[in-house]
Amino acid sequence: MDAQPTASHHIAGGYADDPEGAEIACIYPASGEEIAKVRGATPALIEQSLAAADAARAEWAGLSGTERGRILKRAAEAMRDRNRELSTLETLDTGKPLQETLVADATSGADALEYFGGLAGSLAGTTHQVGRDWVYTRREPLGVCVGIGAWNYPTQIACWKAAPALACGNTMVFKPSEVTPLCALKVAEILTEAGLPAGVFNVVQGRGDVGAALVRDPRVAKVSLTGSVPTGAKVYAAAAEGIKSVTMELGGKSPLLIFDDADLEDAVSGAIMANFYASGQVCSNGTRVFVQDGIRDAFVARLAERLKGAVMGDPMDEATNFGPLVSAAQMEKVLGFIDSGRAEGATLVTGGRRAERPGFFVEPTVFADVTDDMTIAREEIFGPVASILSFADEAEAVARANATPYGLSAGVFTRDLARAHRVAAAFEAGSCFINAYNLTPVEAPFGGTKLSGVGRENSAAAIEHYSQLKSVYVGMGPVEAAY
Image 1 (tube, rainbow, N blue to C red):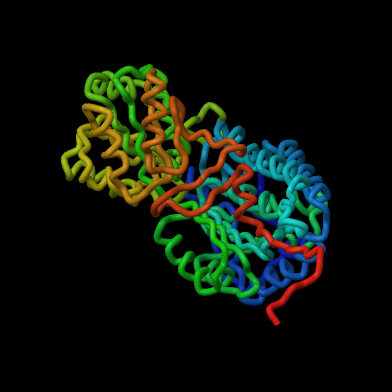
Image 2 (cartoon, helix red, strand yellow; image 1 turned 90 degrees about the horizontal axis):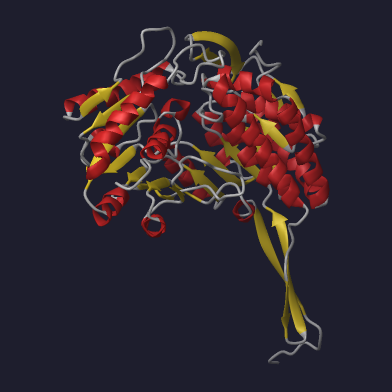
């Protein structure tokens, strides 16, 4: 598959480019080779995208929700029909194994388009009787929205932001991560082919300066970011200058609690999903694995044994189930954390090295005897590194699990369902799991607390973040006044 896109940007229903834009190389993580090239948006293209989104607002908002939903659902079907093509592009963009992208990326994006397409026709206000008078509410779009994506799930994130925004009658300018610029262009192409009016969903490429220009533009009413906490702080501050609505899905250092009575195989499977899927590049990962003393040795041994089943190789080979990190920079960052784990006294159980092969591969790595004050237990690594910590009882485990400035996700494995629900209630996190991990169906709200973000994506809860209520008071009788 040729990874080179038709053009760098998709604006007003068609591809666009500007030779003055700064070049951005697309590097295939499995080989380190350049496979495509795009250009960052120039000020003229940024203006073109925002003007297109602003001009399309009235027509798009003027359609009925059912009409908008029909287009989104057509796009969802097209994404499913083209799943292999889109999954192959996702693998080229991110390095994730095709075995994984075939089931977890474009399919998740299609789910979002289908779900919000079905919801669009039901969006409505309410009526309230106030004596003989009454009040009704109108649910209205916010206007032009800006979406800023992360590099780990480029197709999914584009759809998770576009679907609720468009269902509510907004328009959007979406900026993918400069590390993975290819997939969002296909989302725009598919939406256009499904009948989306020109200007309703636009994609522009670029680094932080392009994102900053979009966020600060006075025509923008809403900003939705998926990214790191430092980036989120900058975007949040810039949006605040214009009193813009904001949704932030940021990083985490999430806890996974495994009690003595847990099913060992299920718990190990959960830890693998919480640490090594997508080579650990998942914001909600449960990278602090707290294991109760009685099962700790058996758990560590079984996890190390199961990780021998990780097949590192060509991501296009569907037998491969463990891919590279997304970039050389990310690989060096992860290797630095591994070095700090060794230096601070954690016990390296398995892995811990860059793999001896082309590309940005790091071995699945497990540290035991980790303490709460170690760097690998405090900072987000975003790579295939699991930290195993021991605990004695429930109260201790919950207190230590919550002792973090992050609050994106948390999980618990136990056969005691009363304890499971008790622990889930005590977690200071937005997305929690009982005897499972990292499952994010579109029907469930997803988002964090504390430094991990604000607002929710997916589910009907996302509608509140992409629409506003207008109250209309209707007087049914004479108007009284004091004078």
